[in-house]
Length: 466
Ligand code: Q9C
Ligand code: ZN
Image (cartoon, rainbow, N blue to C red; front, top):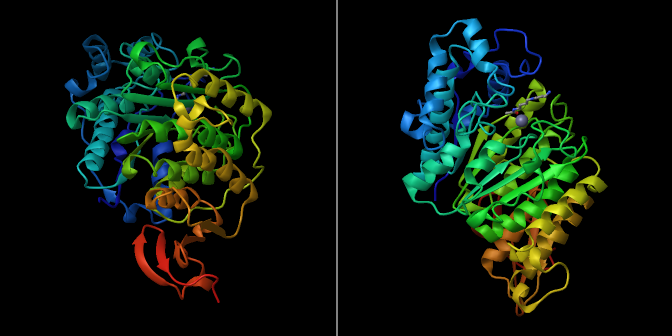
């Protein structure tokens, strides 16, 4: 199995900027990339990654999502003067063009596709592309919200074509709704799109009715569009984790994706002027870790928004550190989701009940649901309780009369790995002989290691331990 993490970055993508006064656009600055990369260097993360060069996306690749007419419009901005650039920009909502925008937008597409190729070819397990301009708001015929070409949507279409993928999960944790991605895949059941976003009952940009929880997809794509609208600002770690535990993860495990693309915007992080949310950088480590348990770990994170330079760069570092399989930092703060978050989560679950078995039988078990019961209990109960308790050591005890196989035990262990700094002891009782799995606690190091997988070891020994 592939190992290693790709990092894709080229400072040429810092070569465009806003040339005139526009308070709507002045937060999207080249320093976003520079400070993120500097911070990665500071933590010695760059040298631990596999550097993959960028390339330009081709016209054919761009046209997997965009019209040739729109491509020509963007192309034409290369040679424009400031006045002409300003006039083109005014045709779109919250967009500015610069003579280098076209070149950078092609590099952003190409960087994303290089990342997909690195992961799909097995050169690396996962990776991150630091790109500008972002992509998730752009549409077939329109730039929108600082976005020119839809990097992640193009990547999904490309992965389907080039690698014949049948199920791709797009997780958009940017604080804005990636309506551009929703429009591209609305009727497509092969791409599951998940987005949470500041919504405030449609009072927040992009002010769209179709960003609400009841936009579930259309036609064959019904059930494959998951919107979690946040109706209050100030959502934090516990709200984001609750949305993962109760919406995204159950559905994603049922979907069984072959590849995960993350529209990795950090304006959902603390301090961001656009998002006004409270999630700390550590939260992104945990979100990343949960997603790494799907699709055989094939995960491509692609930068979208993020406008508070410090918060952005720390969160980028947390993401990359987690992709590199470092132990997870403890998550801090209030661990109960707020009432408004619970309401949003209940609404999405309700809207998607017809499409997903994991949401169909709430609480009362039917025989059909029993197969998934254990797993639903892990996500719906064990993880939320464990995260709110914040333990120093996790002990998992598995009795002899279980239906849980080695893969189930392994997944359970992985899902709990974000707790207690990965200090987990798993005790599996096999008739009268006892086997222990997965302990890094110093007191238990006398046990015999029989197998190693990532951050935990499978150990063989006696229980109780001396
Ligand atoms: N007064 C991304 O994060 N802001 N784009 C409009 C309205 C536009 C965000 C504010 C925000 C675009 C990729
Ligand atoms: Zn955003």
